[in-house]
Length: 82
Image (tube, one colour):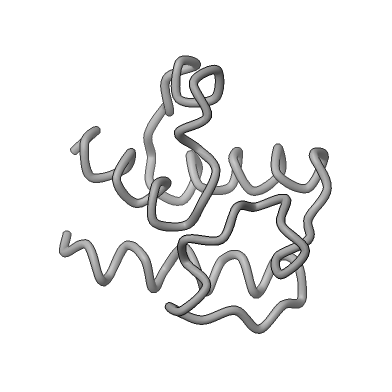
């Protein structure tokens, strides 16, 4: 899968789940930033949905080291797992 496809799908999932209208220009915004503004609980839901949609298990270290924090970094994680 191409990186652009992954980013687009992640953005669409994010927008659908949280009733947002983010685009590619916001893909480096931290999930907890004012522009994206989701709660820690919502991030957990998003994390689980990403794992489900992609059929992967994101390593715990990606949470602990802060890698799972933006759309682009999430895409990087997913591409590294495939």
